[in-house]
Length: 135
Image (cartoon, rainbow, N blue to C red; front, side, top):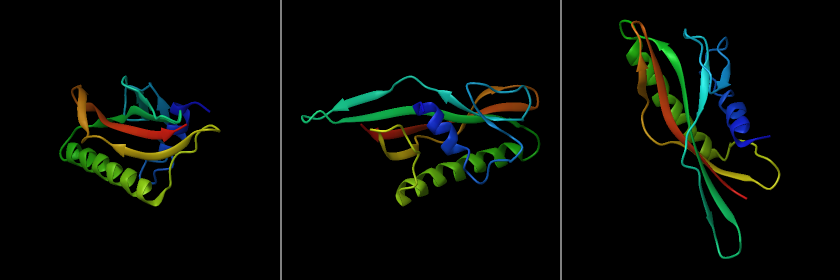
């Protein structure tokens, strides 16, 4: 399983996702019908003197959300809770299952969610995240 597929599978376990909205990769519908994992440049690989590697794999998670009344606040709170969930999962050692030879060390949000695109009644929210693993 690829790293991005493992991330997608893992994020789909977040209990506060709306059950009728699938988690896709690099794809959003024009309406608030799905979540997506965005590929982000900047993968870092460091190698220690024994040849062990630590990989930092950045990605973003987001969705198109409705913007009306307090829905922007609701969306911001959803992503804040999502970031807290990632921290809790890392602390508990409940991390993505990766290919043989790779062990997840942490998964975290790197910042707060932002609107990266806005239309009349909707906005694309995105939160930058990072999976760190050793291989």
